[in-house]
Length: 442
Image (cartoon, rainbow, N blue to C red; front, side, top):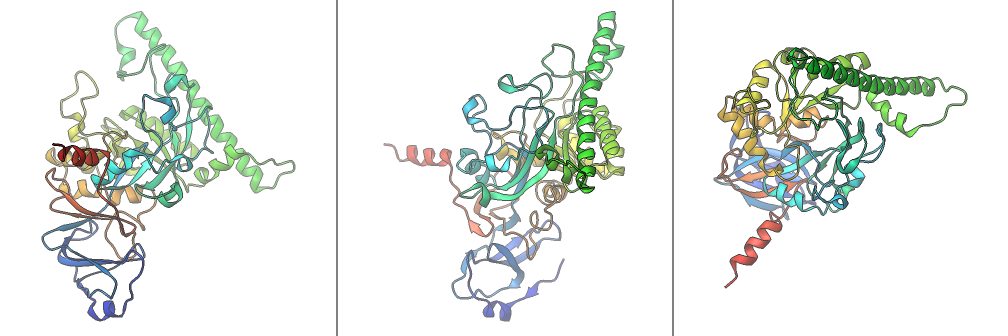
């Protein structure tokens, strides 16, 4: 166990500042190091200033008594549309995309609605940060009749509290969202497609497979050509070529081509994961795999190339009719055993509140508890490039903290205090307000 820092003299010399809080005498779970029993955390100016056994608060510093409580870093949901979609069935409340096949210049961040009711529900569950993804069409067409869209824009990493989207922003360009093609039967509505469809009996099946794969390769070729155009633009800009004209689409691609911003690609099966990795190798880009339902032979490849994944819901049905009932339950343990770095994402807004219980279910099916905790804290912070700011309780990091009554992954545990950037956030939502209202009804 790491030795406590003795800070009595130092703390007495400190002066009170904005968001100055001392959480005193709690059991602290930093995630990146061993738990600290009976420790204190000093928060100044929205950051963790000190962690130690005895910290005497300066005048004006608010004290939160933590005896018998635990402190965890705030949780991070790695796949949502928080702030972009309120009621998915009502078009006027959904701002997740725009028309156009390639729209890398679109940024989710300025479209985030800080007043969304979903944020309060997420905070009560302990989610202090989230990736919010733009999304357009995909597959054979988009929602509300939108055409197919390959690049929907740039995902944002945001805090779940703030007056404006500027206040909520952690990073406005966490990833470029690429909806990579998936082979689907012509005229179909998607769903489960067997990997061995070409081997199914009958001439019609063989014809369907040929047409399906022809369409798939055409779509991949379109995406490849766009990346090549962006690369030609990059070279022309660097060479200050005569007649060079600035193009917003290709400007947005430059951080991707330089390896500064990863490309997030959904891939459900080992074959689709392999296709995405092959594409990334050809284009020399960094990628993050989203929502795999199987890893299989792709796990070794992901590990070898150090490619992280964002796992979808653990509380989910099997992908295919003949798959084992616990396919989704055991996938996190499989990824951990293979050495693949992963985080959890809920991939919707309605059930963001279930994030800790998705991780807890994975623990019940073989995932070590400490790895489950990492997958909703430090792992996503590192995957999205902010491991030096979020995801653990360490000096200098943002004071995104949860003060709980027990184990964060236990459903009985209550969150007593929640801090985002050192500011305590009221734990109320529309649901709790209605509860209080009707509780008083006579």
